[in-house]
Structure formats: C-alpha cells, structure tokens
Image 1 (spheres, rainbow, N blue to C red):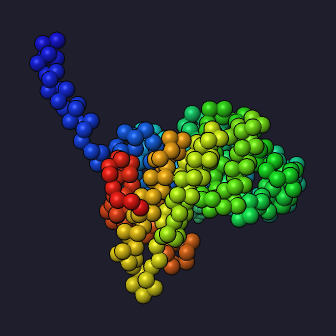
Image 2 (cartoon, rainbow, N blue to C red):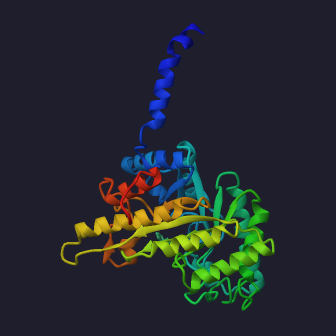
Image 3 (tube, rainbow, N blue to C red):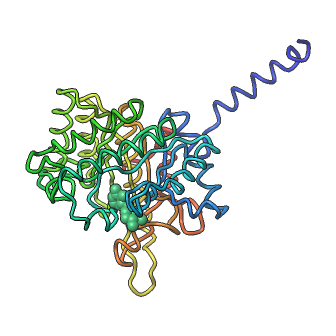
Length: 356
Ligand code: XIL
C-alpha cells in the first residue's frame, strides 16, 4: 500500500505521457483509433525475421493472401488446413485478428474441381460442404470472411463462372441468387463470423459499385445475412477519385453494413531499363494512400484498412503486371517505411496534414 502511494504520482505522469505521445507504428495508431490495420500474408515467409517482426509490430490483423483459397485448402479433394493454420497461429501469438479469404471465387480453384465435369447438383453439394467445413474449422479464429469474391462484371452483371452458370450450383441466370445461397450457408456454418462480399474495381461510383449497392440493399431488406463489403482497391492510377470512394463508403454503410478496405496497393510504373520507380511517383503514391485512408477514417462504418502484402519484396504486382509495375506497398524491399507508410500513419493518427 505504502509503495503504491509513493509511486502513484509517478505512475500517473507515465500514463499521461504515454497517452499523449504520438503513436509510432501503424498498429499503435490503429489500436488508438479503434480500427483494424492489416496485411495479406504468406506463411512460408514467417521464418524471415524482418518479415515477421515488421508484421507483428505494424499490424493488428492478417489475411492469408492465398492459403485459404480452394487451390490450397483443396489441392486434392481432401481438406488441408495446415498452411491456413499457420496464419492463425502467427496471429494468435501476436494478438492479431484473422480475416478469411475466400470461399467462393472463379479463380484459384483446383483443376479437379473446374475440370471435373460436375453437375449443378454436385457443385452445389461441393460448395456447401466446402463453406461449412472451412468455416467450422476456423470458427472462433477467423472473425470475418470474404464469402464471395468478384462475382460481378464491369457492367454490374453476374460474371460467367463455375459457380454461377458454367454450369453453376443450380441458380444459373438467376442474378445474385447463388451469392445469396453462399451467404446463407456461411451464416449457418459460423453464425458469429462477419460475412463480407469482396469486389475489385467497385470502389468508386460506377456500374459495378451500383450493382453491389443494389445487391446489398436487397439482401439487407430480405434478411440475407451479410455484414460487410470489402473494397479491394488495387490501384494503378495516381489520379484516384477519393471523393467517389468516400461517397461509395457512405452509401454502403448507410445500409447498415461495414466496409473494409481489403486489398489496397498502388502499383507504380517501373523504368524498363533500370527497373526503378520515379522518386516523385513515391510521393504521389503516398497521396493516394493518404486519400484512401482518409476516406475510410471519415466514416465510422469503415472498420479496417488492409494492404495486399506490406513489403515491396513480396507483392503480387510484379508477376501480375509482367514486370512492368511494382513498389506498390508501404514498405520497400528492405522493410524501410516509404512515404506511403508515413501518409497512412499520419491519417490513422489524425495529425493535421496536407490535402491529398
Ligand atoms: C492474388 C495473390 O496475391 C496471388 O499470390 C495469386 O497468385 C493470385 O491471387 N483479388 C483477390 C486476391 O481477391 O485473392 C488476389 O490475390 C488479387 C486480386
């Protein structure tokens, strides 16, 4: 008691100082702001010290970049959770949340599934079994799932796909009915998980985002269990209209769903002879990051900001752009924070900063 009385003023001073000092990592800033900051991860890289240390220090959420997709979990038709489990173990060891990705997509599926000649009835059974088994395996460990990924085309129509109409799960040409079926199965499998629809290039205001909005509105009105929309934000232009993104976030959250920025990266052109990016592009890239984080932070329903990887050393952009673009993430190849990182930190901290 005496010891406590003697040290109490000191303790108060220390606590006040800690609360007042500016956060020095994205994770600290995000924790204070009550928002999630995440990165897509590859468990094969956890053994690289700089990778693991940076991840645990800077982020409070991870999402498997590939290892919870069909082509890993169902490499053959049996379930294999080993690599996904590694992500969960890493997250638990470092007090991070896990966002699951993804259960229904027309990419990243194994050949035995896509070329198996299954009937709609068989595919429906396979999909229900997949969603149920994967979500039950990760129940209580994965707090949110991208249940359906990229189901719409640019015009806002359901894309031709294995699950929709080629041959589909029995709901071909019935619009978003197959998406609805997947969400209902997902809710049954794990009623506590947050269920997201995740989409590319539907982040601003366009025909695809209008279609997402209409689908979510319809689902909410009819009690289809959907909790959120993931806006991927793989960006390759530096003149991004962040006001349109803010407006889209506002109309989605007004429907009562959350929005996650789910796959943010900003790919820069590489000089063909040197493979380097231009210095001023790094600053323009930072402004894009700043604008996106700000658009999210301006809306309390936007609850997570996640980048697709975190170090330029490991990013899908290189192979995706056939080597023409790169340097898309907040840390460089040596894990040094880039201007994009500073912009994210400033916006998460809420420090006054220049307009994007
Ligand atoms: C990408 C991964 O980053 C790559 O490693 C993989 O080869 C292909 O898929 N939208 C998504 C992600 O929802 O799952 C994709 O991830 C990138 C585009």
